[in-house]
Image 1 (cartoon, rainbow, N blue to C red):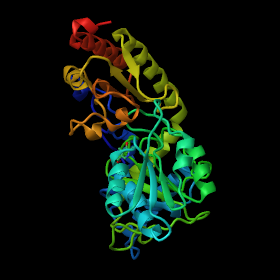
Image 2: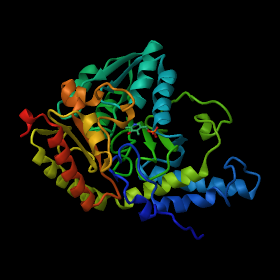
Image 3: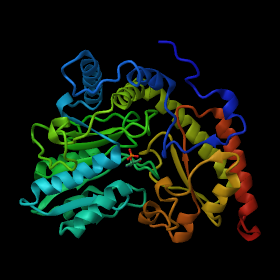
Image 4: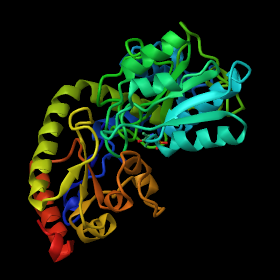
Length: 400
Ligand SMILES: *Cc1c(COP(=O)(O)O)cnc(C)c1O
């Protein structure tokens, strides 16, 4: 099939700010769009319609995509439950486990730096009578295993720790957490929205029981994700949170959306194929940016220096208001102060606060999210622009 104008035409990008907000979302890769298109028009069947060709075609495409996604995390296809994204996957994991296991225990452990799509369902479960522990992190953003071990109780049913943080990019020690949870017979859930397709994720090696995924942080379409649910050793029970036609083995009713599912699988396939070259390229670009920003003086890197996503740099600029900085830079670069998810509210980032930052330093922070279409020339322009803007905004007394 011939498809024209798949990529964003370069002309429309001219005079638009440089995009450095890849942890908020990513453009859909044109190869992903190309894979999706036939499933809107020609092969539009309902994968549950098993009496005719239209249904069979859609069902076959969904089956292939499920196999691709399962293989990407070393799972079996029947362990993949499609959802509308990571928010829904997290809700299904947390509420579904709580509802299925409450007679065995009502204690759940998570971490203060989790995404709101974990913290909000946890708060909801608290309102229903579950006991929640929100673990602190160390100054580098990493969870200390001893802290987790000390928090485990006989009635703990679930531990939820994200793979990669959406604000500061730090990668939590999943293998150690998985081993500890398995040893104690506690289920382990991880929100891998930022990690899938960027770092290797093997649910067997990491001993993960539930894993939340999404497509739109890795050059796939918005509105599609999945929850991996372990079926053996141990078999995880889950109470469905959406009831209806019984799709996804009764765990998530609703007509499956083949274009999104096919695009999701294609995005993950590309992410895996290009993972190591992209990791090296982005690490170089990020280091160049960090080096360039040093010219500001009084800058701090937030999060562990190496145990982090290649495309993430979160920096605090002492004595500068982050919101003013974003505003001052908006015609040059599109980025986020603190977390994109919380930029509607004015509270300082809960993640930066958990690192021990004062409100002022938390407010003085920018998140640079680099990705597949970021170029060296863009990084050079951004570094220059940020340095100039920071110096212009700083009161004369604090200029380094
Ligand atoms: C983006 C994000 C989510 C939400 O994912 P959606 O697919 O947009 O619902 C959840 N967790 C983390 C860590 C994220 O970065």
